[in-house]
Length: 582
Image (tube, rainbow, N blue to C red; front, side, top):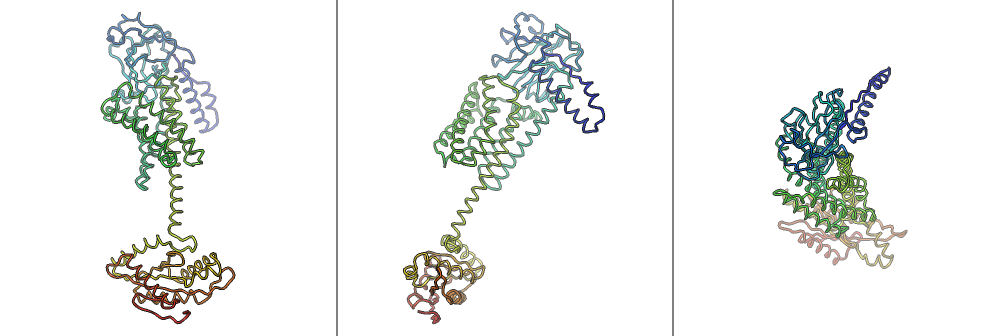
């Protein structure tokens, strides 16, 4: 297309004047940027063409011998641009008619942009065998840049010489053609490699982190995210040609089924992740059901594509993907209205890459022109969205754990007294019974009941009764040792768990506790309220269940009540306690 040699001697001399190493580095970066800009201007035709691009109008199924000998030159027709776009999926013949010599270009290179899923064969004057470039072509390994398809041109080419091209493309993405010096192409390729390496490594690290968190935390959201990023990473390495570093993988990836399968898997995993991330089954069941339908369609396409793909497979998959994106957008906006934090993360992290993917699909389907920024921005967009959603998922799990801890706190500790709840102490008691049985240690429990509690409520009010329960629990908890557990079992009744205590030791603890709690009246709402306690003690016997143990302690408590209250009774033993008895 264009003969362009970028030399900047005057600028080099100017920038090389005194300024130190930082000035030299600055000069180098500016020079590279200008070279990249010049190559872009050439590739887009902004600086004028040095060749004429023509396409063969008749059948493309013509032998190369009949093309390169010039017998079909009259069938070629000029095109108005310097971009190659095949009208059909079949290979097409093109030719470049040079209008200027390339002799003064330093190592001239014929450059084609957007190499993804394109195979180009080039016949130069006097050559019977073509040079071939393909994204997944193992023969081109080591000389094929990932940003361009590049052919070294003979420096002896003159105006009027003809270059014949046979182009096969699986997409309608145009390939801009240019002629540029090797140094310029090399700099552009290095910049592209640095960019691709950075984003692919970032994507791989985030994917590995997601799988690591899944293994450590068993949270399936991380698995969905890891699968999404891993599939996208595989797709990018196939499209960019990096997978060619592993010939056996490149051979598998060259099969069109691999592209459909990996793309479908990436979208499917992404849909499931977002449904999980936004909690759609719980908060928006209709949206979740619509995404389930999309998931089933994508799953069916995935299974079928392992065996066979058709021309409509990509179109079907892209259509379902766009429908899923639209449904996700609806769910996301509804979640925003509900003030879900996850929706904000989704908007910031996923919306940009959604826009890129929609633009990319539309470009592949020729719904609108494919621009360079669409393909080049996809890797960075995926890395950014992966990192953002990883942070969002971590924040979501942190919030869920916080809510769970709050619920656990409420389940474990009684709101009124601050001691353990009935449900929690029963779980702990079962664990301690198993432990006592395993290590052959004794275990006992004490049931505590406030005497004439109904009279306190009737005389002083229910708030005073609550205060009485709270003060009794506080005094008991402060007097008991750290290893002793006290729980509010219901109403004014409390339960104390004593590990490694037999019945007689528990009886003594109960009596001392009763005295410690009741020897002074309770200060309730500015009034002194005399309170006494009745207690029942029981220890664990061989073959006891939780119910057996608690029933015996309850029976002992009942016996204390029957014997006049304000006393301690062990199961089968009555301890008369005249102190404070009423």
